[in-house]
Image (tube, rainbow, N blue to C red; front, side, top):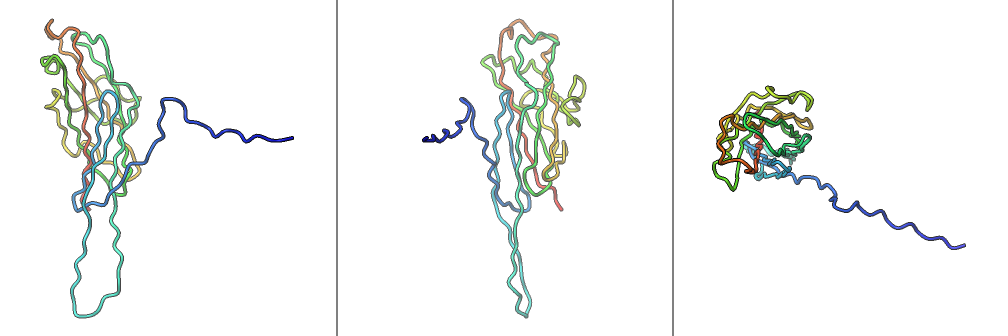
Length: 200
């Protein structure tokens, strides 16, 4: 009796296989950036190298110097999308920043907002804060606030060790006195995450 070979498994429609983020060696100040929007977008950027200085009258044996790497992966664990947000109403969501490199990173976050109604982002208040878990991301758990485009946290917002992660709680609130002119408007919000190497 002849046997038939089972066909190779095919990926589910609409899914893409995950690809590891490319890592690059850096100089003394290493930067890694990520971007989170209402639908997550992540990107990494890193350039540079390392150097060593030698002097003396005796011959030195050949040495090998290897640089580390930085990497930052952003994932969204709780949806930030909201529809029919009413004046005075807010919504919370959380995302995770993971350090995939070999050096500790100090993380800073900045925000941006765009809308076909230019007045709408100015009626939104964004709030950010590091929390232990996504379950801790509730109204009032944030520590920094500002308008889209104006909210920038310091680099000490969170320190992430190699292989570790930090959960960021976000809250979006529509002003209580938002005018009728922004009714039915839609805004796209982005959170830019920058990790800077911790100086040894």
